[in-house]
Image (tube, rainbow, N blue to C red; front, side):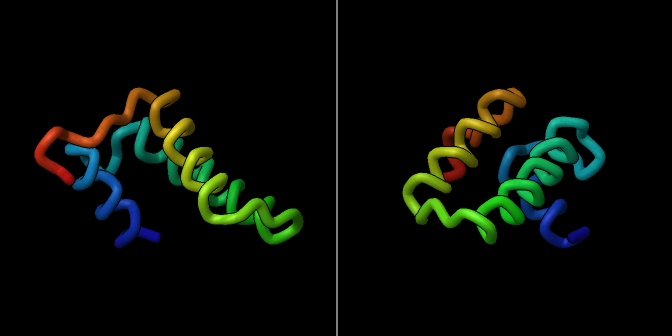
Length: 65
């Protein structure tokens, strides 16, 4: 998970120990487990991940896409 945390932090132009990045990682773990029990599909999952990031104040830099 350390590598994934570093990837997320870099994508959001944050540090790996940023509380928002750590919270997003925790939410993603929970969402993954929930999806195993009750699959929601790629598009709905992508919407939920984007919403979780926004709620934590995480935004991709304009040059990230």
